[in-house]
Length: 215
Picture 1 (cartoon, rainbow, N blue to C red):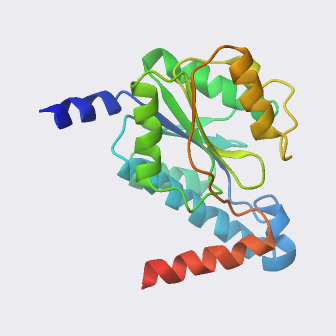
Picture 2: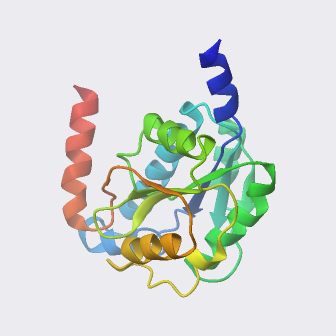
């Protein structure tokens, strides 16, 4: 009975996936020197599919795909059809503004976990543990990334101060977010550090992950 109640509470936690369209020359640009533009775009498609499937397999609340620059790309339309999930267009602005809008849109219906598509190491259990932190009363939950950013952030309610004027794509993101959260008096749970796929060196780890999955 307790398990049923736990599952019901976890289903109140929504998941938003921020995804960039897999357009050659625009997707995974830091990997283009190693892969070429077309293969980098194919990798973007693959990572997005993996992330969406992870979010669905977590068995939480509604999953929404936030698309950039718009939701018209045929990949997004196909994914929305096959995965049966809504697509929303990311608003203009820097990453922090776009993240804040997602929380502002979703949080009236319940807590939200927000993830990107760069972390193939993110598994359903990671999402469930993060969701449980919010259900148990934490105001914010994070999975830091090895590069100093984070691969997941979850909030019970919007917190614009966490994302405004942030030096995105630097090693300062997690420490500054941590400091801001504590300054706001938020109860924060920080989970294990994960890795994402941003540079050519990360491709070896992705290959190793694939090999392990195949085995």
